[in-house]
Every structure is written in structure tokens, then in C-alpha cells.
Image (cartoon, rainbow over all chains, first blue to last red; front, top):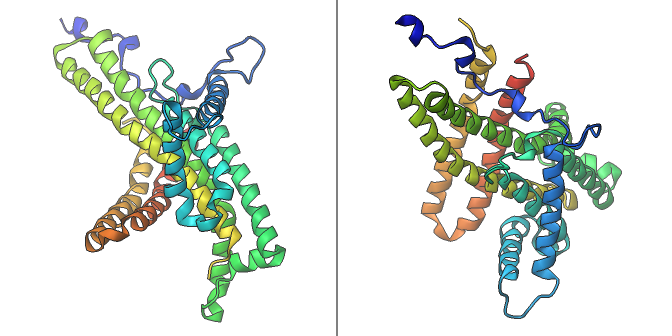
Length: 263
Length: 69
């Protein structure tokens, strides 16, 4: 009796781990070309096609995909660029809008059924975006404030007592020159990874306790797992859109701090 | 007893950001209630404060995996 109820070793519940993020190559011998790389290419193509379809032949009375494109553009301009860049925002909209749309599509792949992998949960993808922003921001700062002025404005904010600069200068340097950009990439990476792990965990619970190893007590846990998967997918949709917004928002903020020194 | 200390570490790392995010949104909502016309600028700044605070918890998640091994 007890032997029948004891699950076999292979039937024990195994929480999903970091193996979720290891993808074999899709084509033999081409090591870099795995599912995330394919998704990144598709995302790029989708972003280009969407922007082309929406803005290549603009009509005075927008309809169809132009409506969608203009809504996204207006959101990015009014909510992301304008608060930080003010009258400069039109100049920076191409970059900010592209980043917003790219990250948004990339994140939403995490909720598209059968794809269900946000490739931003592999550190390389957000890192390359953040490195690009870092190079741009440093270049802009040096160009607009001068090589000395940029670091002086960064490390020595005016209006503090003299002795406190011993503490403030290194902290400001590390936080604005390094940590700001590290967390820019890490934020997108970690939210996507954690979200993907949580979804995988709950759906694994549902699968295991309802299909692999069905017991009366386990069925309750399994139903809870399925319900939580649905709830967390809705929550993830919100997080994915929010992270795209935040990524573009921080880019706009970094650009604005490089263009004008803080007073 | 089996498991990873990293999970406890992440639990500890989430305390501070949890309190911080609560303070930010609590005060943000209060600010909006006091001056609803300033909603757009308050919301943008609320989001900024939120993402800076959240970064700490996210570093906790990442390092938990880095040192889980």
C-alpha cells in the first residue's frame, strides 16, 4: 500500500532552474544561432516592418496600423521623452522610440503562446543595449560639457560643504558612471528572468500534480498552480510593458543629464 | 535539510526595496491626491524612484543565482 503511494524517484517534483535559459543551436554547427538569437532577429524585423507600415505613407486621417504607430509614438514622446528632454525631445525620438518598441516586442514574446521566451532574460541582449546607451551618453556628456566639465559636474555637485566632497566624489563617480548603466541592463534582465522562472515554476507545478502524478491531495496544489500561472501571466504582461517603458525612460534621463549639467 | 542559502539571502535583500517601494508609491499617491493636476510629473518621478529602488532587489536576484552554484 505504502509502496504504491510513494512516488518513483523520477516522478518527484523538480523545480525548474537555470536550465531554462540554455538553448541548443537550431542549426548544427552554428553555435550562436539558438532560439533567443532567432527571436532577436524576428523582433528587429517586426519593429522595422511595424514602423515602415505605420509611417512610410502617412495619411492625414490615420487608419489601421498608422493609428497604432501614432499611438505608440505619441506615448513615447509625451510620457518618455518630453518630461526629461523638453524641446530637444524630437531630436532624440528616433532612438527612444526604437528602443521602446524593440524592448516592448522582445518582452511581449514572453507571453506569446508557443514562443513564451523573453530573450531579454539572457544578460547579453540587454547588456548590448545598455552598453550602446553608455557609450552614447558618455560621448554626449564630453561633447556638451567638455572632457573635464563632464566629470567635474558629475563628481562635484555644487552647494555642498568642502569636506564632504571626499565622500561624495567617489560615490557619485561609481553610481553615475558605472552602477547606473549596470543596473540599466540588470533591471531588464532580472525582471524578465525572474518572471520567466516564476511562470515556469507554476506551470510545472500544474503539469506535475495534474498530469504526471495525480493524487487527491496533489490535485488541489495542481489546480492552484494552473490558476497562479494564469494570474502571473497577466501580471507579467504588465511588467513586460512597464520594463520597456522604464528602459526608454532611463535612456531619456541619461541623455538629458549628459546634455545639461545638473544645477 | 536541503536547499540554497541564496533563497534566504534574497529574502533578506528584498526587505529594504519592499519598504522603499511602499514608501514611494504611498507618498506618490498622497501627492497626487493633494494636487491632481501635477499627476503626469508625479507619475514620472514616482516611476523613477520605483525603478531605482527596485534595482536593489533585482541585484539580489541576480547575485543569488551567481553564487547559488
